[in-house]
Length: 359
Image 1 (cartoon, rainbow, N blue to C red):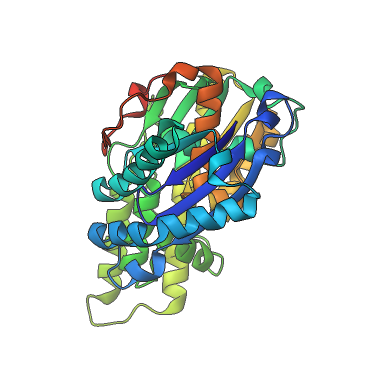
Image 2 (cartoon, helix red, strand yellow; image 1 turned 60 degrees about the vertical axis):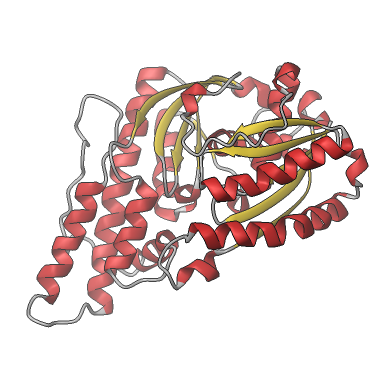
């Protein structure tokens, strides 16, 4: 099958085409990605310090069809050659989801194509299988595996037994890791999005200048909490500026380093515990925070210590993209063809729990 993927859940318009024959033939999964097109709205939202839903929806309307044409051209296919359309059904911004859903279902109706709604997080969860670094000849041999999903809105540890069979082992009780990065960046006067800015600045910091909390580090479960860490950063900025002093570059770098070290220590400790509990020897890391260099270094070291294979999606697939939606759609339709939707209603699900998807 040739599957067209459409991702419009937030502030990236992502389109991709995936050829399922590579997965079916146990060949490296990334070879099936025939083409992708992506437009990020970061510059537009930067002046507001966060995503403005109405502006995001309007930009998806403006860009989706041109990006579909561009992606098909890169893939060497025409729209008539597409066998199925996968679109992001949720979770995400309701208006943004409606744009992708309406386009996908209109095309499916007009062209008599199969269509399937994909959970946005499931796309992220499976995207590391597109990594060219897989050390197995069959990506199907990876199951079951552990997954750490770290993004702006989600921090979760999951056991992935099969396509569509996911068990949440632990999740954030308040702020997600990516959200804490963004809020810390704002407190330090850094650019949006905050993750890359804080991570880069941390490289210039001096260790030991600040001692920040590690929330739930020694809890007897696999849950996370980052709200207290964000508050600790706020406290340090208030102490620094209470007498009118400005936050100089070295202060920002030192505090960024302390913040990153706290986040990385908590995430890696929970991952170590999950490896011990589950016995899994493969860990996949997905979501925008998965591109963080400090986190990658720590988890790769942990993988060597525990003899666990650690997989990441390619850097261009860490953030939202159409490739993960096309790929997830292909895997789900191959496993359960009956998942193809029969309704053409625009049934988006902005708050769709991952453990309630159909497999």
